[in-house]
Length: 150
Image: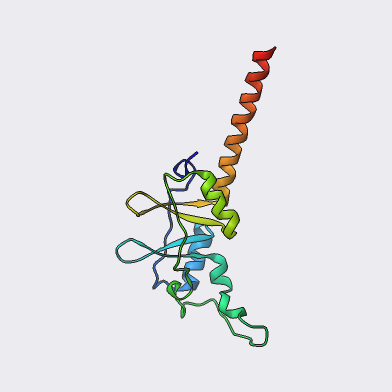
């Protein structure tokens, strides 16, 4: 089972200069929780989640300091995005992707092709579809082996 079989190829991307409020509402409009961030050349520059937009890590950096944080367009996606992005490739196995999800507690990963270009997103929901397909195959296999014995 390869990543390419389950990834979502419809990619809604952000730019580093996009305002965070506008990006949050784009995510809501397209019903996505994660967005790759592309530079001017169309290369993956970062990754951002709705959680990053709602409450960035620096807001809670220490218990004794309170930071005012407002979801507005004064901050940009480039200010909050993750830049050291873990990716999977179209040719990677679903097992490898699941390992990344479990180890790092990610909700989605960008998918790159052999040339290193963004071609999709693999989400936890996509992994559930893979599991469902695997379980269907297992059920069909157990039914056919039961018939062969009978």
